[in-house]
Image (cartoon, rainbow, N blue to C red; front, side, top):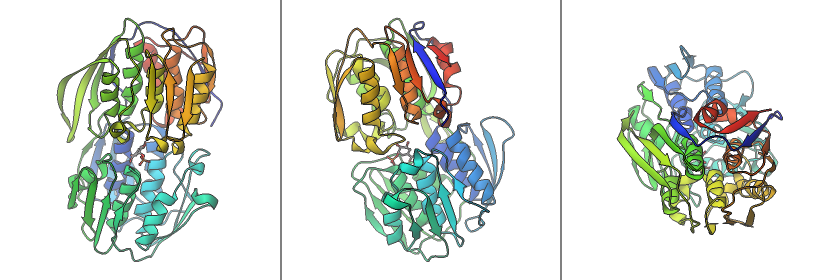
Length: 437
Ligand code: S3P
């Protein structure tokens, strides 16, 4: 990643209205399923971020016809369940763990070979969590040393369904196995220790594939076809999260977030912020493209430290960097446990947040599966922090800057384009003090 940086410092109270871009998880899945469906699908609200675009480019090179008539819209001419063809070279997933892990399952079922590669951050991430169970289904996939990318996938294998008891709560693992299961003989069943986001299951059903699912369980059989359908991508709760925290901690804020995706498997942060005393009100509750959406009005409120209930961890797994900033501004200590998965995200999010918070004068004790964060009513000291190639770390420290006594310089911010293009413009319009250097 390039060494772009930002300077964040207190701006104005956050006011007005914000509509954040489309959901990353849903955008990946929409491109994948539309590409292997029969017929033409339209995707509205597609995330114009690098991660989703990497998946789009991969499906173009696998033979799907994808048009982009205007920003946020894709017209996908599906090639049918067996219509993908071998790409000329390696398939570059960029920064996207979701892209790579889901593709590992989908490509394991093809007649041809594929190689999946990624950027420096993705190249360090664990892939055996998918290649292990996929091998049990009959897939042949080689990883790099230590179980990391690149993934060399040998096509032409006869896959068979398995019943898999995952020890990890991971929607990526579940989805990877379900996508391989489309090409497998018999039934593929995934059990989870705690329920995870169910977009793959819901979207398969919307494309007409019979799938049986309930929280913590998903089950399907191979041998059907997908029928093209239109997909409306809701606004990404994980992008809204930065504004929920920022408006909660900046005095005088009163911000309206429009049409935010409210899938219950994504909104753990909302419950936790409310337990901490946040003032967030839902209005205009409705549905878009089969997903619950709502407007969220968030006003500044004094926060208090809590023990984050472990049951919320999978439902806020991408929101911990933002939560750590809220915790650092709360009265008392916030304790996070049961979140060891944070160590294998786009960066080691416990270590990266701890280093950054310490640089800004916050006392934080790390544990293997979480941290204790001592809140400071007087906010943050100024200082210099590094994102370690992680978009959510960069945006979280932009929030910290809004409560800092001196400028917060954030190094390595180009990665924000992976999930939230236009963040700086939107944040400044809402009142953030934020400069691109
Ligand atoms: C995702 C699942 C989660 C999440 C990631 C997106 C998905 O990962 O952290 O940002 O779209 O399925 P895990 O499956 O590793 O928990």
